[in-house]
Amino acid sequence: MAAAADNDTAATAGAQSVRRALAVLRVLATGQERGVRLTDVVSHTGLNRPTVHRILRVLVEEGAVEQDPATRRYLIGGEVSLLGLARSTRFPIRAIAEPHLRHLSEILGDTAFLTIRNGADSVCIDRRPGSFPVKVLSIEVGARRPLGVGVSGLVLLAALPAGEADEVVRRNARRLQAMHVDPAELLERAARTRTQGYAYAPVGVVPGSRAVAVPVQVSDGRIVAGLAIATITERLPDERVPTVVAHMKERAALIGAQAAELARRKGGRGSA
Image 1 (cartoon, rainbow, N blue to C red):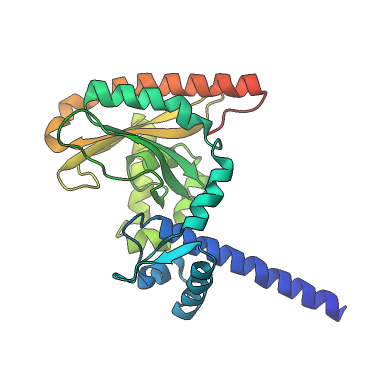
Image 2: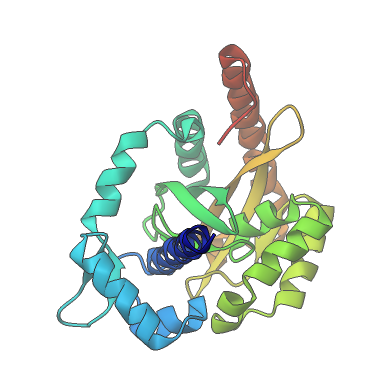
């Protein structure tokens, strides 16, 4: 009996270590090429500094994390990128959406983004710069943010049942507060987005920019992605938003229909 209890304790501790390591990696993923400070990892995960430092040291040893010697910031390491190559076809919607992103970036002239949900986060999986000389590259491919932050994340959060949206925001509360985002206000914005059918940010991530996003829906009603456009403020006055949204919804509908058809041929559900 004692041996069994010891095994259960060890298994629980092992699972906790894995979860903590993944939580650290998710925070580092938000830093992209800039990297993330140790203090920010501590504040975002809620773990104490010695624990975070120990996890980072092991991840660095395994090649899953790198540390910039000049800034001392931590970044996702090459080992994680290489592991991801084993499932390079994991997101068929990216291939489906690519010509539609390109079409939007050409006819609107501005940067188009495709974003999906991953647990309590949104992740940008594709980006197509537009033809206009001034480009708003607000987030990079692979950028990860708490669900609801950014217009694409907002349409994905708004797609969830109210109770599930509440739970996601509760799980992200510490990260949101570290980003100076009020959880209650975020839920209010999600409710407005749900009503109007798109998300609009008159002040974008990049100063002097604006962004708008629409949901990509498949035939069973599920929202599988967010389709967004980001541009400089002057190119997206309030009166132009309905026209831009109409173009985007047309393309989102085509992406959703093609994703559903692909899933039907494979005999499964529409998937991102």
